[in-house]
Amino acid sequence: DTGVSQNPRHKITKRGQNVTFRCDPISEHNRLYWYRQTLGQGPEFLTYFQNEAQLEKSRLLSDRFSAERPKGSFSTLEIQRTEQGDSAMYLCASSTGQRRFYGYTFGSGTRLTVV
Amino acid sequence: QKEVEQNSGPLSVPEGAIASLNCTYSDRGSQSFFWYRQYSGKSPELIMFIYSNGDKEDGRFTAQLNKASQYVSLLIRDSQPSDSATYLCAVNIVKPGSARQLTFGSGTQLTVLP
Image (cartoon, rainbow over all chains, first blue to last red; front, side):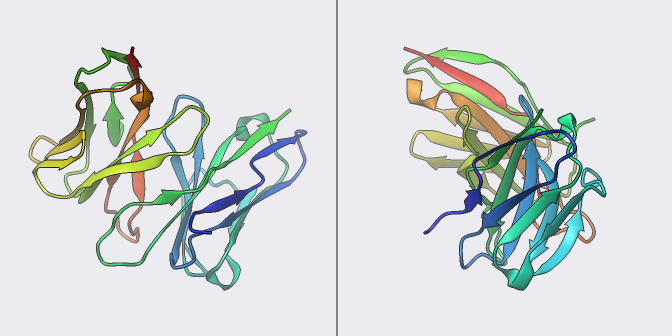
């Protein structure tokens, strides 16, 4: 597998339920990012990992959101007590740690619908 | 003022024409600039990046950067219907404690008419 893999592709949940998404980055990429994208908007940064360390979190990431990257491999994003405003596409991206930055590779995303 | 601004469009051009997409950014410390293409319902796909002032060409795509004017553009020559998508401008805005985080514009929707 040479790409960024995200699961599930789609998730429909009832308001108040917890959901968890998984991202498997490109194997040689040590940097992993989570973004959220709503209709008609560009992706918005949520959080960033370098290896297993979560180095940055956006103010968009409320206390209902938590992300982990155990052992610096795959990552999970959990949303507790989902709200309708959480409905969005959740995108995972990865990049290398090379000095020159060549941008991200995005996964196919997880589309969350909260009903 | 948004950190990265794009005309939301929609922009329509006839097949074979040149499509011109524009982006401005607010942070003069920005170092690298990217264009992503996003088809409806799909995730963004990197098509071009540029670091230095001037033009960078890759096939039918040309990225142009003017750091003094804080302006980056994407030209698509010989536009094809398959180019119809939303084009996202992304900027590596350097912030204290932040590494290689991209800030995206809201995208410009391009339609190429057959």
